[in-house]
Amino acid sequence: MEFENRTPDEHVNYSTEHPLKEFAWLLGGLMVALVALSFLVGAFAGEVASWLPYRYEAAVAEQVDMQLKGNAPDAPNEPAAPGEPTPAAIRKALDRIAQPLAAHMRLPEGMQIKVHYNNSEMVNAFATLGGNIVIMRGLIEAVPDENTLAMVIAHEIAHAAERHPVKHLGRAVGIGIVLSVVSAEAARTAAATATNLAATGTLLTFSRQQEREADTIGLDALVKQYGHAGGATALFPLLEASHPPEHRARLTILSTHPHAADRVTELNTLVAARGWQADGMRIPLSPTLAALQQRARKR
Amino acid sequence: MEILYFALDYFELVLFLVLLSIGFFVGRILEQKHFKSIRQRERESKNILVFAARFPPNLAQPQDCTLVCGQVVISSDYFKQFVAGLRSLVGGRFRGYESLFDRARREAVLRMKDEARNKGYKMIVNVRFETTSLTGGRQGALPSFEVVAYGTAVRPR
Image 1: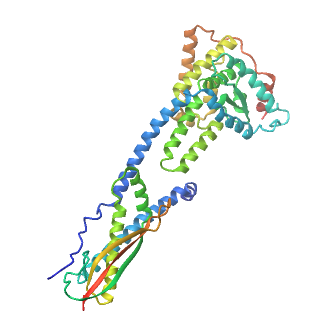
Image 2 (image 1 turned 180 degrees about the horizontal axis):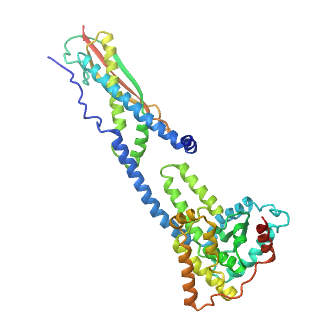
Image 3 (image 1 turned 90 degrees about the vertical axis):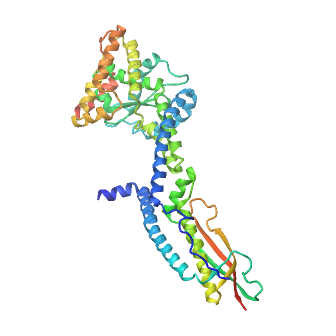
């Protein structure tokens, strides 16, 4: 009897396909799936977050509130320069503008507007979780009168009242959960940065639709408080001027804020449609805020 | 300089990509080299017959017999492991591990044949395979495993 062992067939037990082909398919598929899932979860989580009663938001907001108080440069109650009003005094002056405006809006149950002051050169203000509103020094220094400042504050209160920040945070956390499929580290980072960014306002870019809503509601409160719409559009030229021209072109494309000129037109149309008085007596800034402005002019 | 800063900023990502390409290029070169060597040695050791049957074909003839054994410990590479990680999301053939196991199994048989040849045998019967995972179920560890081929080498007395 004759026996022989034949050499094994090379194409049965393993694939001769190039490994990069499989790699590309799997990685590409995963990316597409993640992007699609992020969009879905993002859209959905944002909506779900805004349906939750305010008291659930309050728990997260407490951290944000503490971070705003702890990290803000105004934490020790001393003036930034000698002769300036103290941060507490500035906060109080801002609060005196904000609270009557908030009274004209329908805030979610349990929400209280808390105004913070940030000693930053930026001409900016933002609203974040828990009815917290941050006004920056640069903004106070740029406004010509209280009415203009009130419009900005009213706009930010409207964001808080409409719960835009929590919609935004809900999306960020939802996307973080999707990322956790790939890496637990990425998910942790996403969740941690979401609360972090909520406190600094960096990630809180609202949609154009939300900005329009805030404009409309803010204007309504402004008119109810001051009796006319004066100052509502005064800030936009200032904002435009504070950005250099080459920066401005990019801002129009990238920024989620509707173009300043569009907003001015929309606000004016609204004023005309509602039959409001377009302008009236402007109220000068309170002595505390005026003192802050004078210091800036001297510099 | 800017490349250096980028590398530092995204250190984890850069490290991952470096490991992935090392795994791919080195792993692929080594695998092709190994396959080449396996094929050559399989041709060379054709004269040693291997049977899965329990008894030699000519049972009437009294036989000298001894246990022969070939053992291989082999490890996956970073690239194969990463692709397997992606694959485990959707399921299907672990192509990278298939070639890895094929190499391990054939290498084990060759080593077993080597032992038989060294002892002066030309036939091995009752050949069996065993495999053990060295990594066990540990998370994140690079899969490595042992393949043992063993059988009874026989020669007419």
